[in-house]
Image 1 (spheres, rainbow, N blue to C red):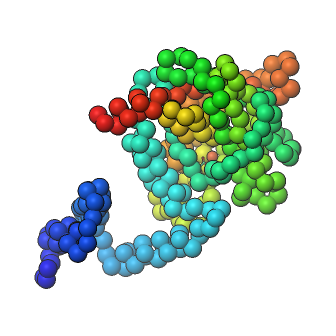
Image 2: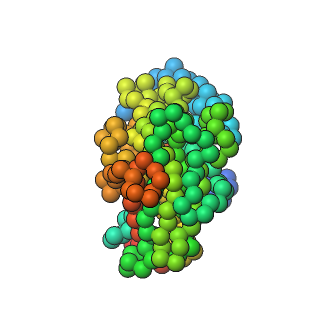
Length: 291
Ligand code: BEZ
Ligand code: FE
């Protein structure tokens, strides 16, 4: 199409979709909406050419920041509230199941498999507070789920995840545990501290452009998995941490906030946290998705 105008360019591009090659229904749906919103955004703010070039340069810098340890685009999505939105769209909550929240960029697959009660800490830090974390994993009918796997990861008392800190051993503060026949799990870790998400590159540029801040409240990350059940990606937040109401990535849910209590006799830790999880049957998930 020649002679596009400010008003006709969107239809021109939308009608080009699939004209010279097959595209699926979902591709068409995504691209049509993307074009409408993107063009609408440009029209709304009357985007100027130098701003378009600056945006392209920003994305190029973001790309150069990525490597096998740093995923800058997830960070950008988090700062914009996109990951939490996509998580809620992907995992609508049904009944009493546990709420999910963002995965974030720091998960590492295949963490060390550890026995019940073991500690994920391979190194100690001055001022750290050790914590016993335990609870039950059940289905939505209250039945215990045995042999569910629980991946857990968190930042160290210096505010850094192990894979962003050359002074921590590989897989420090990461582990995979399993529930016992009663659905019970237990592990030792350290109290997670509030930390700033990496803001020394484009994520920081975006935060400053937005006039926001990079801080997250202290939290433990979990992935719970069991065949036949929806995998739960979630976090447990320390009720006494700052930033709960101002999380840089908007991921705090009330149901995931819990108090770190003083350790009980026999725990051998400074603190104690009890947190139960409820997983939904896969069949329930399929029914919800079909609604
Ligand atoms: C995290 O919790 O690890 C995280 C989530 C989103 C952005 C950065 C970090
Ligand atoms: Fe985190």
